[in-house]
Amino acid sequence: RGEDGARGFAMADLDPEVSSGYTCLNELENPGAGATALGVFSILFSTCVGIPQAYKIWRLKSSRGISFLTLGLGNIGSFLYVLNLVILHYNQITLSLSRDFTFWVSAQRSLTFVWVELFNALSMLCIYPLASLYVVDEPYPVKIPSLGINTVYSMRDAVYYGFLVQVGVVFVAWLPAVFVFSVDGRCEPLMLYGNFVGFLVGVIIVVKFLPQLRESWYARGSYSLSYLTYGVDAAAGIVAWAQKVFVTNERVSSWLPPLFLHALEIFVLCLNFYHDRAGHQDMSRRHGPGHDAHRRRASGDERDDDPEARYHHPGRGTAAPPGYVDDDWGYGA
Image (tube, rainbow, N blue to C red):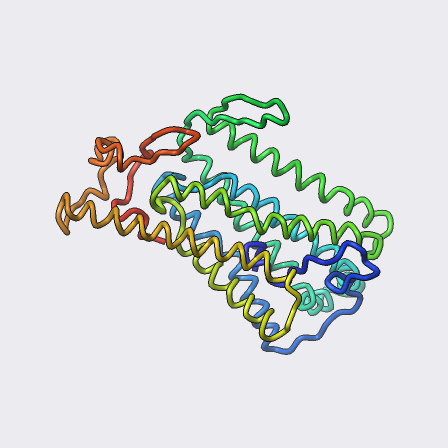
């Protein structure tokens, strides 16, 4: 799974001499048929995890209710986690390239987590540019008093600059590893750096869904946020947490950050479902059980005349969504 689920992640001590959570892996493993099949399934699952979210944005032609800050933090965390695993598995990667193609294919069983996280990162990355196509171009104030920043961007500009920041952070983080690998070609010189990257991933895991919580709180409904993408992620994460606690008895730092993330995911989904259900019942009372308002454009939707039913964001004001709106308030995936 991806950094959303953080399976296999361990926020280790920064000193590689005393760390039991982060060490270079120097030998190729030989997992059984069951473990191999599970690994293939995990790769396929990670590749597809972002599809329901992308489809819902495309179907509604709207990114309403989605936090771009959460998406951005998720992208940064995903590619830093891939870096964390590449460092950890680099000696295995080198070994896999030491013989012919058949040997390389067989060796990939030892690199399952690397492939899982890479495809997960790419799957979730696709959501950001798609959501940016349908963003409502509202004023977006940016205030950072400590840095003397107090300006207002359009939402489209803010999303674009946010993407550039993501690219910059990931590039800077990967640059030292690429340089060391090209010069030394071993994992060991990067163990300390790998532990630091792992620590950053742990911090991102804890905070990344907080902006989505705020967005959903003011949106009062799921709108374009996918129940399926984040519901499945939360369920898989809880299973991984139970395995770490009750089966492998891993230390707290390996499962507490993702547990906090998945608890937030579940809370946000429950919050959205509550508002979706309330909005659906309200529309049924207004139009009857067979109402067809879910196919009306937002400009003609009765909710546009009701200030209490419109989407109000404390930083960007009140706005109606573009294009079609589901009056079941996001019951779709």
